[in-house]
Image (cartoon, rainbow, N blue to C red; front, side):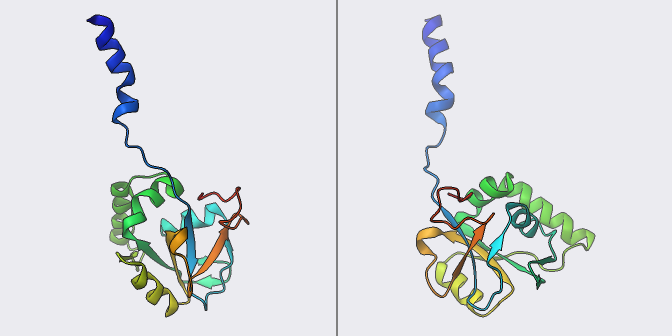
Length: 151
């Protein structure tokens, strides 16, 4: 009995852990945006509200595709959703950020918003990053590369 209990405890983290295959995430902008590439560092700074200007684009509007938000935060920011929310609340309360992230639940909403806002940036599943969205590279790698950091 003692050994059975030890075996169950030893296997518990593996059996209880949610199994989800990570799918590629595309960082996208509208067709009028001048952004083409971001470093992972700049991407983190943008989504944490620290980057007021990146690659000649001033006043970037952060856009979140809510169904993918948790995975994006974990993979890019290495933070939980609740921690990122608390972070943004702190920035807004301190007056350090004036525009919180826009949130959309549907890909057509993200497409429409980015098509009309050249300063907006979003993340979507790679397989849904079609026109008019423009996929930007991260650290110089496109999503088709095996070196792409959001693969």
